[in-house]
Length: 421
Image (cartoon, rainbow, N blue to C red; front, side, top):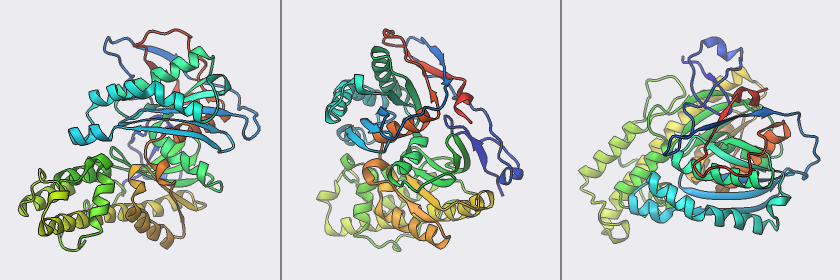
């Protein structure tokens, strides 16, 4: 049996470990794979500081969260008592439909065009100005470096101009911790399954900044498989692939196409969707489905064929999640018998079929499923702001940056171990 590995909050990177990890948790220091780089190659490094925990009453802190890791430009203002003062998201749905997925350079340009407007709208909806903020939180990874840079630069401009602390946020940690904003009884330790277009991650969250990776994807994530299936079936990508496949699957017979469950022979908690993607592509080719003909123009028989493939794909894709979660729960309970919750978050967690199936798995194992509402499962500024609040209260933030910096200034966060307890 493969052993889980310890993680830092700023790099969910697997590290070889022995079975003793099941009973003894040791902190490890992880640094980012590489710093953010500019086109000119200029890099500036600022040491992350650990401050004394902030003695603030509930509601005293007000944090602006900025998220630009992929294809949504998002900002939100959140109070430390959990009150969401505003939430604004600018979607790149038209670009997704045009290019059949995320085109990094186009996504960067789209972020740059709307970032100022999105942030200002978030402040306006909260009836606040930058002077009312306590700090600025911004996603610094993982994600598309070109897109991340837009958010980081905006956050630093605001923090520098108004002398505000800045908090670098790990995108996947934010997906996990936003559940604590919604479910007030959710205390550490808990489990989390984070599922999106780029990530499949099963973790045991022992404390803020202390995570054990139980499983991850070895190739493609489930969201990528949904997107490719939707594209090959000629579905409307403006809604993204997940919702489109889920809707069409309701019309199909989930037992009609015999797909194989990935990695049945591997008794671990890792995921693989590359093989299932290949199975779907071959099934589509065998039925001579032409993706150039949109689903809205397909014949009745053609539509049924597409629906059967969508339903069969979804059943197997989620069965793979179920099997891995079941094993991960058993592992986690050996390490932390007090676990009571499994958090499921990330864009794919908006899928109602996924939620229903995983609810059965956790119920069978005596746990409770916690899913943020769909608007907080997809990429959003609320999760970034809330995670910033959690770390700010523990004294984990960086000092205000200089008021004036070059446009291509990019931050590489060092001394990340200071974020750790």
